[in-house]
Amino acid sequence: MAHTVHNPIAVQPSHDSSQPGSTSGGRRHRGGSFALVLALLSPLAAFAQEDTRTPSTQAASAPVPPADPALTQLLAEALETRPELRQAEAQVRAALQRVPQAGALPDPVLQLGIQNDGFNGLMIGEMEGSYFSIMASQALPFPGKRELRTEVAQLGAKATSAQVARTRLSIEAEVRRGYLDLLLVRERLVLLDRLQALWKQSADMARIRYETGEGAQSDLLRAQLELNRLRQRQLALRAEENTRVRTLNRLSGRPLEAPLPTTTRVRDLGVPELGDTEAATRDALERSPELAEQRALVAQAGQQVALARRERLPDFTVSAGVMPRGGDFPPMWQANVGVNLPIFSGSKQKRVVAESSAQAEATAHAAEALEQVLRLRVQERLIALAALRDTAAIYREGLLMQSAATAESTLTQYRVGRASFASVLEANTGIIRDEEDYLRTLADAQRLAIAQAEVSLEPVASMGGTAQSAGSMPGTGGTPSAPARGASPAGGSPGAAPASSSSMSGM
Image (cartoon, rainbow, N blue to C red; front, side, top):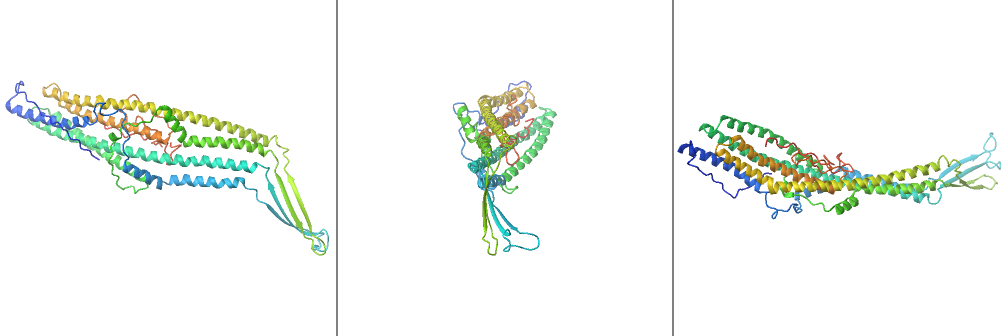
């Protein structure tokens, strides 16, 4: 969405009647040409002034922007419609159904039989040793085994429930990254439109100077060439914008072709604050679904060790039955109690205890390693965010103003014949290029904040020594092109942010 910036300062060209080799008619043509160049520069200078306020009027870290209604609606729709979240919730319900199963008694056994004397006929009621039998038996685990099995299943369900939190965080991060990418593409389109307008006016000026004999034909050809290149870049950005819109619509359960208007700009987001290291680390350790899952697995492993020790104790089996004999013979009955004999404990039950102990130790070490990684990722993001904050300050407090000053100085040099027309246009184009890099810096900072909110385990990509590389510092995660996630339910990594589209080279 285009944002018009008005220049409050009207720049007027100066006329030097003493300039050598000039005539009155030449001064009129030259004065008109210079006025056009200055008119072309003025909107770019005003555009640069938009983010070049002094530190006293703009803080190094912008305050938290107001909630974006479009983004809020997308997040609500995504959490309501995403099948990945419903899938995770169904898996938790399935895990909870395993809890009562784990503590249930084994099914009883019912036996029906007959005992007969001889093979010459049915002797029930005639022979004392002939009868029908109805037997029932029930296995009874050693006391304490059922409780431990229930606790193991409960802790397993608790570990599974962490996947719901991970899925929710990953969906939110995925939507936020997609929305940020859409804002960035649309703001780049605004920059491209400004550059295209500049080249159109420049082509008109170059034609006037060429027709009056003041300029070279190469200036006109250069302007026409850049216009065609800009049309190519504009088509690519429009295609990328459509792709971003459809991606967001898919994430929120909307029709893919539904329009998605936005009012927020990347420059409005500023550089977020993640707090100090201690607070950010504590927040990550408390909210990390992976760490919560791992801690539940550690507790489960401890209970599995206790259960393995209890499994060495024998189980019991009780049975009872009646045997009607018919005739004048009274019925018989019997009751039995059986017990397992762990005579192979050395190669079975004891090995299970050793295995469970080793698994518990491995799970504990895995939780420790995961906590270390979380602490590292938080500090990586804080370090990267500090660098981006300083980079954004350089853009606001110096670089953008210097770009405008360079363009103005080059224009002055061109006026006295010490610079070429191409140099003027190249200097003016530098304002757009620096502004785009500034937007990328702000977007990278927002990706870091998204990764922190997602509690992403993805590492922060190296800045590479410059903030001008597209996607040089993804938040990291998702998705990716992060998505933590903690892998994202949609296949991305948490906190991995997709690399930004290629920069408008030549701008």
